[in-house]
Length: 115
Length: 113
Image 1 (spheres, rainbow over the protein chains, first blue to last red):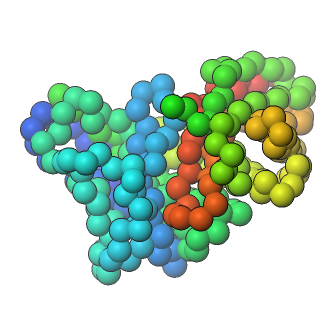
Image 2: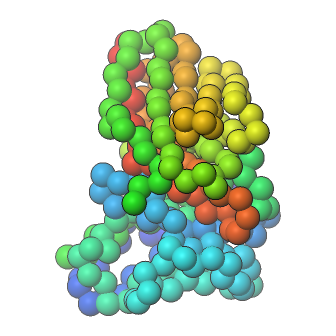
């Protein structure tokens, strides 16, 4: 009964490279959310997806960032041409329905370091 | 523009005593509030929530109080245990739309044996 799985746990990229972060939701969960936590900050919403659909991407930077949740396979958060300011912890969460009374289930996060 | 504020970056209490963590919000559209607990190098774990139609919700040692007129909520932990030492995040959600949460910056709770 695995929880939300994120990989890799740690990712180091040089400036200008691409970063791909993966998230496998809990079994039976069809809603996926991505959040970013900068040092000494709270989590900031990035994007909310359901299978094959982006529901809300109001927190995504306009450029270089994209997300998908295909019919098969994990959700992917993609950051192109990374810059030092992208260094952060990226958390994925999943839920089985659009009701918040029990909260999301978060993964352990991917810590991205841009050098 | 920080819509959810946790003004105390840290709190230290003795084991067995009460821990009170506070949270203020500015957006009147928020109608659902949650507390998450986070250990280092782990993801946040859901702790307890409260709807805006209530003013109190209790789950074991954890109680959340909501004062809508003051736009303030608090989390009470009684009795506090060393295993409660973690960062606690307050989060809020507005009616309608997607279920995105707005988080505060967190309060680091240390419970001393």
